[in-house]
Image (cartoon, rainbow, N blue to C red):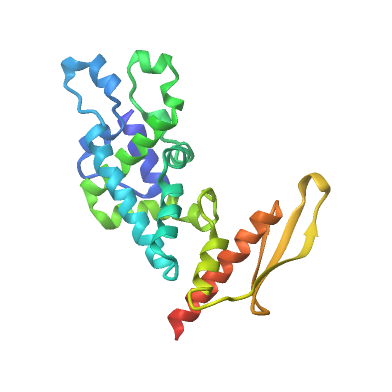
Length: 235
């Protein structure tokens, strides 16, 4: 298993561990360690504890830099949606990590390899192992490959209310008129794509698209926030 795992992470993430025992530990569930207690395997729980903090820190830093105009509350909501168990379990699956988890017989019979909470723990333990073996920058680089692009694409859109964030930002110093106009629709009724333009005091700040008007509005608001952020940086 370890050799296959090493080859996998080398080919997928260009990662090579200095201390391979950390890699094995990150994929050893407590049920497996208990079933093979005589071998004294370390289980992933300590690395999961570390990785949980590393994922949150790296994600916080990424959001802080990407959205300098967003208030703390909105950043917190985006981070919470991005690092919740279901989101990280999804990443574990997409990284093809479940096949390498060492599980006890009982956990295997109960389909533990598919449980979101367990997959989340493995993803965090793996990230913690990267941090412990190679430091913050390598852990951040790994997350920039697998997590941050999904934030950019709104794959974890639950909790990311860009419309509210835009409204709060623009109305800090008084009432500002923000309009969302459907400028185009494409596709059949059962699979329609909406295009929505956002205007602030009559000026266009971008067009968002989505399979519903609400999602297209959120995309448009996100583009407006990014444009305002770029303008702020250049001033």
